[in-house]
Image (cartoon, rainbow, N blue to C red; front, side):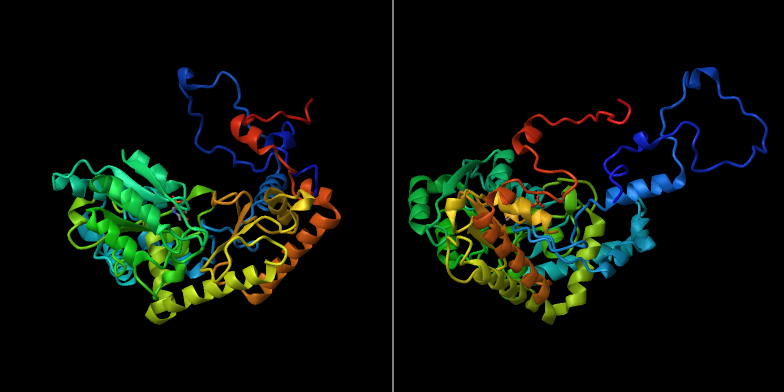
Length: 467
Ligand SMILES: *Cc1c(COP(=O)(O)O)cnc(C)c1O
């Protein structure tokens, strides 16, 4: 790519008097704009010819990386295949041109989609009712916790303010509890990655009557299936608390088991993770919340209308295209892919928790710690090879967490190519550690100072060419 074009602002490509279009001669005579509305000087707009503009933005867009460019093994925040037919459905003018204030009798079809999706999600989860208002997973958590809080208050049990959350949980769980005005109590994990029942028992014996809920993710964020859910559910219900299921990891459970059957009372689903909506850069998302029968009257109003409607259409299209029987294949394939990568790399990357994982797993950095090459370095080096980095330094249980989720829809060739590169990086870490430590080398921007970039972002741009 032309390096002069790359990275410049469109303003730097501007040449006085250059034009990308011309208007026809005015046929209507002069219309004079009142003086007080007129600019005192010309707007500062770039002056470029059409090809320069087209190439500039096309080249910039090529610096983006998404699932349509290559493998995206991000764990926990699952980026997966988004069948293009879903986009076509969501883009149908009958859906896209809906206005939220349209008369109700003209939106029957759209409401039918929402009702159909609700029926499908109830069948998948074993819960009785869903609200589609929340815009993302974290928003769903807040909504669900508000349901729980409303429920306890309605029974005059307003002193229940503690939410039990395993230490392996996604950071949004404690954050949502805090936003909801509840108090977080951390539950420890065992060495096998599962909730420590003894610690849970201790907590409940200390503060049972104040327990509002326990939030669980299953499989948890280590990709480990929590086998002791029935006992956990019994302990929490017996002390009067409700069970909240963080459904962001629903993929491997689809059609195999249902949170409702496991005793969960409230849950959210990340439609944008499990049911195929591309969600790079923070949106769009949808975090519908499901409840068991009898809790639906506690749904709070957290957003207007029906939430992110186009995401609902895509989820609906995705589930319908799989159908009841094929939805069951998602879990086993996601699990197979994750275990295949894990087993193919565990001789060179540190695997802290042995055994079968579900849809994702966590390495604790490279096995050979002598090299000084960190998880950050491995992630940066992957960019050089054209891969999006996995999730790094999460979960917090390990120092060098490297969390990989291949998703169900990747081919064996893709997985093999990724494994090959991961092994190559492990080799480089031994033979040429500096190469890995100073990566990336092939990206438009090299290694940035992450802390400085986050704490003191420079959001203005110095025009280099004019100086
Ligand atoms: C992604 C995720 C969330 C939060 O969902 P957002 O849509 O990003 O707000 C919560 N819990 C788990 C386990 C997740 O993976």
